Image (cartoon, rainbow, N blue to C red; front, side, top):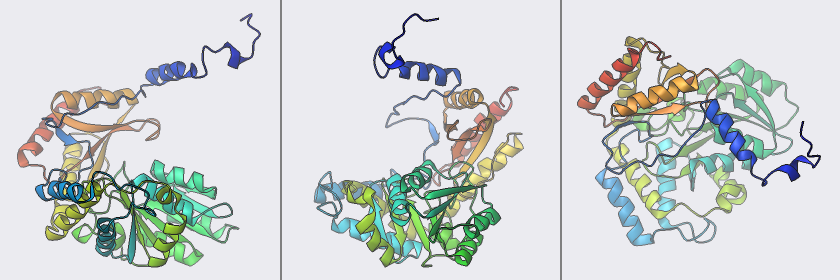
Length: 394
């Protein structure tokens, strides 16, 4: 027993000394994370990133970013309401909205901030947010920051959503969901969720981060594919950092909604506007997709091939609706070992562990790209075959 009778805060070496113990605990649980810079000329086959359509190095996209910098400079110079809105931003917003079948759009400096902005601007204390249990962290954080009451429902359980809406005392409610879920890769039952929202006077907010540019005809998104584009009680949040090969986010919906966000979305009002290079690149990528509408179908086909290969090899995998499939490894240590095994053989895959996924569900997150060659596909087959042959792979 310690003879030091000082209060705990006085016995510490410094106020952040607890960080060392927390790091040791994470390390023991297999949950320590590190940043690993990648080289510009990496020889690895990238199945970890989110460049779903392979447009990050497309000549037209790169050139558009360069030209935007030459015309507008390296930064937007201010918040959107001061000097941070250029003609390029307005052009991008109009074309994003048109592609998704929505009336208007508003660009944010990240997809995370787009989710924070729209949810906190539409819900507050005295409102209800019904959130899918597998929603992305940005949606969870946005709901918490809104100070609305939060009801978390089982994944894609429409009956549970309807019950939460029917039992509420609050006048206003949002139902918040991803269109294509970022880890398992499945599609939300958007039509059924919208019917529940319409029946109970709620708004459906759909995060299309993994759907826009990938799902639906010409990559117009899962909301468009479900026949919900342009509905007044449907709001779309999207990212520019995945299929559009850039950086930033957007909210798409009615002109009335966008006008409200300009007045009320704090993550837009108090943030520097998206850099011109990112806006230019995203706009060019969108135009490439419109000119080559087969790209979204190609990445979906490649993802399904990887899923079928995993099943063929006896691995446990999730069926993809878009570009993402997961190979379940179980324990965090098993997932890390599998990732490192693939990396040593030239294949870069994602590794998701708690709290990103539930305990016991650590996994390899494998993202396909539309520009994967047949040669690369054969290399993927070889590496996953070797992984599956390891007796302790799960």
